[in-house]
Image (tube, rainbow, N blue to C red; front, side):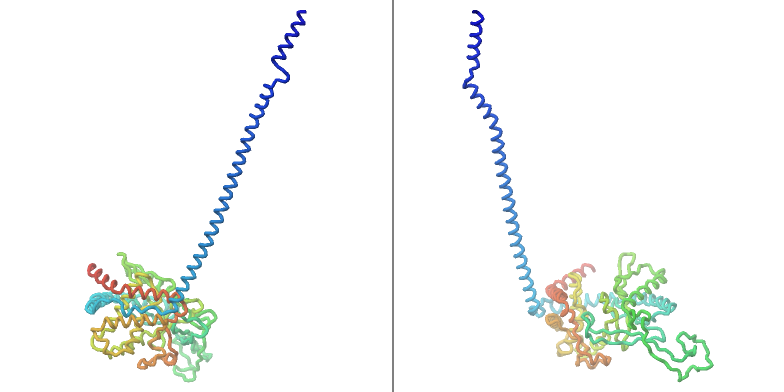
Length: 496
């Protein structure tokens, strides 16, 4: 009985404590399931959010890429437009004449120009005399040593040198006997001689004796006595032949090579300097390898003297052929012809017609001074000193001599600058001698009298960059003319 009651009590207590259909248990299960689902939903939302951020970043990156490409295309179009516009403007400037500014160039008054020329141009020329005297003595000593070297190896014969101007020395070369030079002037057909208005080739010839007797050979001793041939035998026959591949000649030709002559001349200078360097307390160096005689003397004090000693081949006594540095290898056998001596004779002849104390030399030297100062400021150009000299002689030939009196230096200087400016605009400056009928008083070689006129500005026609550089250089010189004269005078006064 008691056991039955105990079992009933335990079953009732179990039903009360853990009913089979208890709703609390189901709610608990739901709560547990919800708590498990929340992290999954959170992860899904964060994943969706991350996907959205990634897609937004990709869209922004693509958007920036399209913007950058669009900006690049627009910039490229704008750059090309500016470039084409600038080129068209440059073409128009090159095609149209430059506004003449030389007629209105600002210059000091006549009295200032006279004082400037007397105090600074002439005085500086007088100071150069002492340097010229030193160079003359040194060059004479150096060339004597070079002749000793050439006499030993039987190479070219070095003649007496000439000082053309300050620091400009020419050394004529001649071949030893029985050799000689024959000049062939060129006609400019089929080749580009833009940097050489007048040029020619130098052919090496040999005067051969045709008899077979040993006394008639070129290497016969002077003391040889021949029983068959007397000293003045008129029956001795000679034959002039070309010397192909001769000494200092271009390969497979009888023509003198500029490059070989340059290397030989520089080598001879070095050997001669080694012989006499113990007598001097300075150094002698070659300034430019491409220029055969560009030399510089360096003193221990730091001062230096730059000068040129150029090998030349004379032509008709007063003219000579010289080497142009930095010329093309295709033109190695073509030498430029200089007519400086004939031009000096013409200038001297024209000066005799002018009034006493004429201003033509003053105008020329002041123009050269302006050109030199502008070159020191902005660098060299195709415009050279001899262009100013040529322009002056053209003016002297065509202008009334009475207009060159001393009180007209400012007007004549403007005329000279205007002539150069017009010549630059037209890219034409005729050689004063060749093909000019007004210079018949100067006895030129027959080949040059029959030649056509030569344009000294032909390089400006061929090379447009040289033309623009020369025009810019000249216009800057005109703008700075007053300032350069005034500043140089003040600087020299302070230095003194």
